[in-house]
Length: 144
Image (cartoon, rainbow, N blue to C red; front, side, top):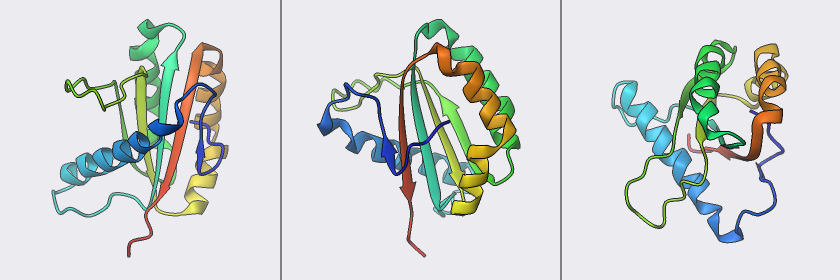
């Protein structure tokens, strides 16, 4: 929900774990692409991925409900998915978070407008005291 640039994270994340954020974006992009007709087209030029570790993991359903209600209604959002970690039994998959969000935008202007949008700002204000850690990854797809 909040971005600090191309990639931001709170202290404590092992430096070798950054690749999984890109992998998460790829998986989310494929899922959204499949849901939009299976054509293999990229759903968004800019992929904004946010992973939350909550102070109380029992708050997961409420955070997801708030995001599901608000994110798709923000002008400029062209793709959205939210959920929990999926345990597939692979040690290399990092599931050390409670909620993951994928939000897609076509342009940098749309992304900038999202950051200042009242719905986004209200969610940030409501949830900031309940978040233990947040990792943000922004991926730009320059493929034409």
